[in-house]
Image (tube, rainbow, N blue to C red; front, side):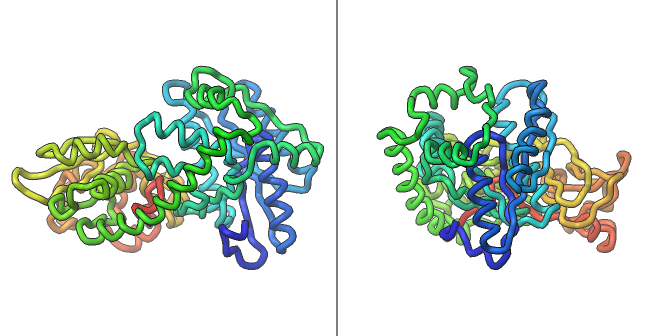
Amino acid sequence: MAPLGPFGAAPRLAAGVSGGPHSLALALLAADWARRRGGDLLALVVDHGLRPESEAEADGVLAMLGRSGIEGRTLRLGLPPGAGLQERARGARLAVMLEACAAAGRPWLLLGHHRADQAETVLFRALRGSGPFGLAAMAPTRAEAAALVLRPLLGAAPARLDAVVGAAGLQPVRDPTNADPRFARTELRRALADPAGTGLAVSALADAASAFGLRRTEASAALASRLAATARLHPEGHAAVDLRALGDDGLADAALAALIRAVGGAERPPPVAAVRRLRRQRGGGTIAGAWLRQGRGASICRVLREPGAMRPAVPALRGALWDGRFRLVGPGAPDCVIGALGPPPPDVRKAARGLPATVLATFPAVWRDGALVAVPALLYPESETCARFALVFAPAGGPVAG
């Protein structure tokens, strides 16, 4: 934990705990670490609701943690079946845990990914055509608006974590979806054939992730410098970039991908090869939920949210995240929702002081029973109302650079 700090006195930690052996080990180790420093741990148990027995399993995990002296809380999800289920479940799980951290005043969220998980991630991203940033796999720390996400076990082999749980006399829950051959990660796990996480393949891949991680840190500084000189990301969720000044190298592709990821509200940037093709395409286009617009012969390219890809409205409650980009930090109101502004009415256009309608349409707005209540970014209709619905631009994938 020390390299991930500082934590100060009496740290208030939260951890995602599925009930599997590795997240249980995380809970045991983190709770002990926090107690010895006068703090405590809140275990967040997410029930995805994907299997009939999942509710009972989550309650059982909560009871098991309680017997070990660890406070827990169950978070219920209702994910519909369909394509990309594992990916959607991961995103929803992280989002609901971050919301719980914000509500409970827990500035650190710990996740139990280990050395073999890191190796799988390297393979998975390599097969998807990720560049060096993606091949760095999971970072030990990642800033989110609600909490700092920490992965303290990335260097630990799963066999060591199994031993921690065994020594504590706990019976972990085995999720059958982890062995479902329909999911790509299951096949990768079988290809590695190293459940203990101590073999040469896992070690080599995890070491590669560390090496790429160092490159990512260095490249992030260069990327931030390039973006500072050539682009502007507005807190309303759109950007402008001078493509001529941006350059025509790999760093230019990575910089544009970072902007696209932030504006599109995605967890990760799109593949660099796709970004490179779009960057060299006249007039722009859409990619990963972002819409690139460039006038003929112009070097300035606008990066907007793709209107058709924006997500449905969400209840306007403190901590809510809409569209993977905007978090409500004001008190909100239970009878309102946050959603896209859409075609702006005349008085909103007047308040916008010349911003194009295509940009305004993607702004977050507050609605009550279909009637427009506020556009916080424009202080519309007035500042007192907007203070109640104060929003911050907090892209789901974290900061654009750094």
